[in-house]
Amino acid sequence: MQLLIDTIPSQRPRRQRDAVDAEVDAFNAAFEELDIAWRWDRDVLADFGQGDDRAKVSAYLRERGAHLLKVYDAGFIVDLIVATKARWGIQQQ
Image 1 (tube, rainbow, N blue to C red):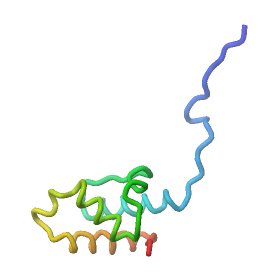
Image 2 (cartoon, helix red, strand yellow; image 1 turned 90 degrees about the horizontal axis):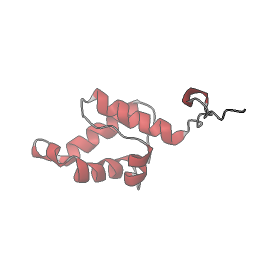
Image 3 (cartoon, helix red, strand yellow; image 1 turned 180 degrees about the vertical axis):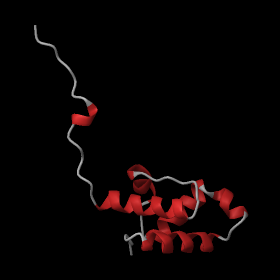
Image 4 (tube, rainbow, N blue to C red; image 1 turned 90 degrees about the vertical axis):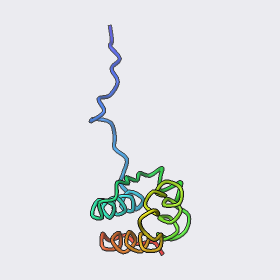
């Protein structure tokens, strides 16, 4: 009798990391450094990924970060996040 056992997750082939992963990591590093409780993944970046970094962050801020606009100017937050992300090595023009 042959047993069919699914591959253990740790033994499954892993997807190759690419520029999208690096960009997501850079955004998340910036959010963490700035103590902003946001966490992006590939899906979030795809949803808000049109345009440059300022456009991505602005769109996300309008849709999911409006609470920050009660305390901070949108331009200030966007500039701060984009500048911090750029220090992490990935910048989209």
